[in-house]
Image (tube, rainbow, N blue to C red):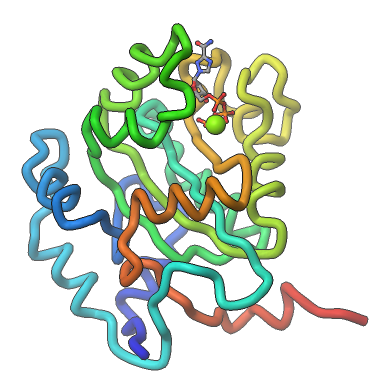
Length: 218
Ligand code: RTP
Ligand code: MG
């Protein structure tokens, strides 16, 4: 069992941050790729501080411990460039979902082709990969009851034109080619995507002090 120090928990719960990362991560080769990226200039020291801050009664593992689901949410390059990271994180925190992994990174086209592999035959695929590789993204895993389906509802429709006001895409963007955020479309794809973007040890199993106020039967 490992845990986060106060400092790491502050990072984990931060709202309004525009560009941060913490104990998220990729497989080692992806991590090395990330470190070598010309797009991101995060110092290894800060990454080491976040990792070294893990000490205490919280376990780190890839799959949710209860019936609660985990979903993979990613703020796309346009969302990052437009300064929407904090607003998007705030929506998931306010809903009551629990952040279990987060990382800002520039994954590169090969990783993005793998992430969107099911769309490889679509005409927009090359443009999608180029757009997704155009700048840093913020990759996250969020946990909670019905997190996958509810996450998709919070995102809105793929095309912002069809997204209702109050949804993220409905409120913050206009065209399908710049729709600012990705969300897993099923539990299976969520688990696959979390495994693609994070190492097991970078996903944090922790109990928020507010949990009994978010979940309860009467
Ligand atoms: P995402 O995977 O990013 O959460 O989006 P989604 O499930 O709502 O939609 P999906 O069909 O998986 O499409 C993935 C992303 O491809 C881009 N796209 N461009 N006609 C187009 O130009 C077009 N269609 C889709 C969008 O960025 C979409 O979110
Ligand atoms: Mg999709």
